[in-house]
Amino acid sequence: MIHIAASIDFTKISAEYDAYLGVLCASILENTTADVTIHVFFIGMRTDDYCVRLTAMVERYRAVLRWHEVHIDAAFMELSHIHTWTPVILNKFYFPQILSDVEKVIFFDLDVVVKRDVRELWDIPMEGYAIAGVQYANSFALNREFNSYEETHTIGMRVNGGMVIMNLAEIRRTCDLLAQAKAFVREYPDVKGVDEVLFHHLFYAKTKLLPAHCQHFLGMDGLLFDEESSAVQNAVIAMHYAYESKPFHYVNGTPDRYFWQYFKCTPFCEEHAVAEWYARVGLMRAALVNGRRHIRAFYERLRENPEIVVFGTGVFARKLVHYLGTRGIPVHAFSDNMEEHWGRQVDGLAVLSPVDGLQCGAKRIVLLGIINERNNRAVREQFHAAGLRDGIEFFDAKVIFEDIRRD
Image 1 (tube, rainbow, N blue to C red):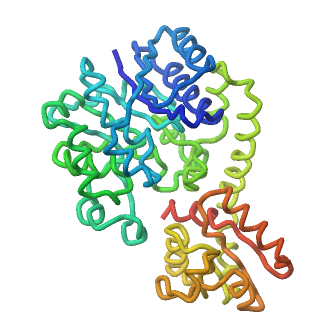
Image 2 (cartoon, rainbow, N blue to C red; image 1 turned 60 degrees about the horizontal axis):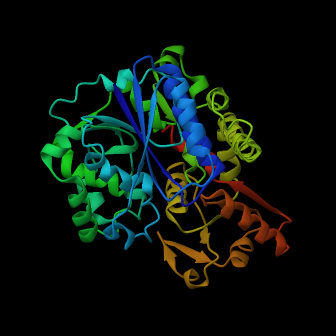
Image 3 (cartoon, helix red, strand yellow; image 1 turned 90 degrees about the vertical axis):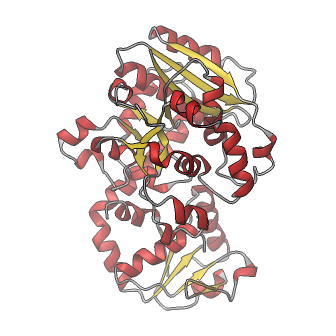
């Protein structure tokens, strides 16, 4: 029996995430011939028939779906202001305890499509290992949100939490994972990817990196799937496909056809809200992927404009400025909506008000260094409402991150 785990938050019911979980289950079961049990860990409650419908779908594949309610401990809830501490992350700490009769489990994020038999992952030898996954290729020098603990201790052998093989038997032999997690967050309350960092902290000597073809799982090298060889395409087991707050997931390789292929196998395919949402995200992804053909011309356009302003001062914006600098494209200044930031220096550049930033040069380009699509759109509307439309070109900086992921 192969055991799969996934997590969902029912306190924030979303047709999108309902669809994600259905697609994940369908893609696993369509491609796997072995017996499978899917464990779904959740917080909150549902009053509709979603769980019944998904359970019936899984049973039609002659598989088993088990629902596990998780009561998140107060130790975590007290620090819930840290936005990345979602149930998807926290629920992992409860796996060894709740799945007391299970020796091993494969965890997938919801926005994943599995395109090969998961037995290939299940059969990876785990003797003496607690964790196996894809190496997290992160640049700490560019990410100021990572604290000193993460930068010092997790540069090597840290695996991404989106697809993790957890040897629960070995974890139970090694430590009480839940107790260790509570102690860790008290000592390091500002750690962001707490599941990945804690796994590294506890199991760095018992971590296995997955085989080479699994490294394409997150597209850390900017994989554009359709442009790869058939050998590469056939080897990839599982990939992310869309996640609004992380723009690099838009362009890391899974074409729309995989989502729709498996979404049609779920009982939620007629959900109008999901169709509208995915159409919007699909268009955005298509535009970014097509942007690969024009990226060199895009850089030349930027080089012709000496007064580039990057709107935003967050991690994404700072990464953008650093990367443009490596391409010989200097940025004139940051601009930010928050008045308390005006007049400050960030990475050696002045932070201007939006109006001052847009008036700083005759040839003006604004790069929207904003990850969240909703916020991105709101900033554009703000500029237009202020009458600052004429003579200004706006570029969504996510197109540049398509190029960054290939470097």
